Image (cartoon, rainbow, N blue to C red; front, top):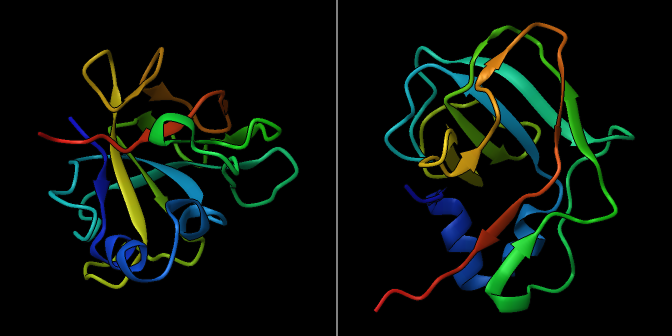
Length: 147
């Protein structure tokens, strides 16, 4: 699998900004249900299970340097949140706080599968209970060259 970048994110990166500047201020939302075909696709039959912000309630940011073309979460931040519903996490989206999950090419999103060793984001268990606290200790997006 691989992270899926929305059309708007790719447009902004091509024209006006760094991946860091585009993604700073996002939240990480974990969903249950079928994984949308693309990050531009609308949520359909999905339930929001968990939203991660910083431990002080702020939106997420990334390190200023991208050593090895890898953008890492700000090491000074603890990304955490309490589950707003119980279920099985199947995918995550980094998205702006006001994102409604509708389809289209206007939203900044990074979509990733959640699960075991073959998933984009590996977790010890995909099951989450209402009110359970989760912490994402490490998160990185590597931009790789295809040849």
